[in-house]
Amino acid sequence: MRAVEDHARGRLISDDGPVARGVPVALRYDPGFSPATVRFVLPGGVEWSFPRALLEDGLREPAHRGDIAVWPCGRVQTVVEFHGRDGVAVVQFDSTALTRFLEHTYAAGASSLTTR
Image 1 (spheres, rainbow, N blue to C red):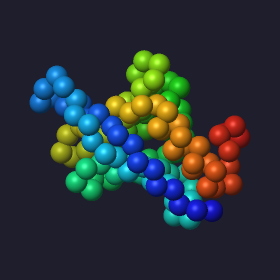
Image 2 (image 1 turned 45 degrees about the vertical axis):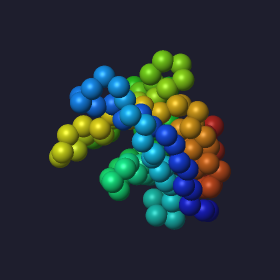
Image 3 (image 1 turned 90 degrees about the vertical axis):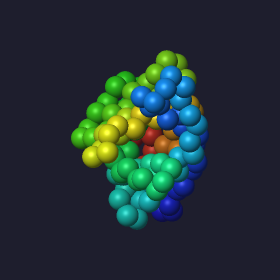
């Protein structure tokens, strides 16, 4: 089992204006640390950990657990919404980047996408 770190470009959507700005996001998975958890690291080192199953489910239909929601946005994008003490961060991703990351996490561990 090996750790995975992918990088994706997300579009941070804020109340500050109508235009979303692009931000780099590190997508991390470490089966030795927690085989059921993925981590997203936003600019400034803000890190969110949540169940890998939530990300997988949210690619197909709206899913929510605790402070994090994931849902498809059109045919090719996925939104991840993080609720924290300092407010809400909404980040839109190309779904292919998140799907690729999930595939890498399952390849790194003992499971596969089809066994869930």
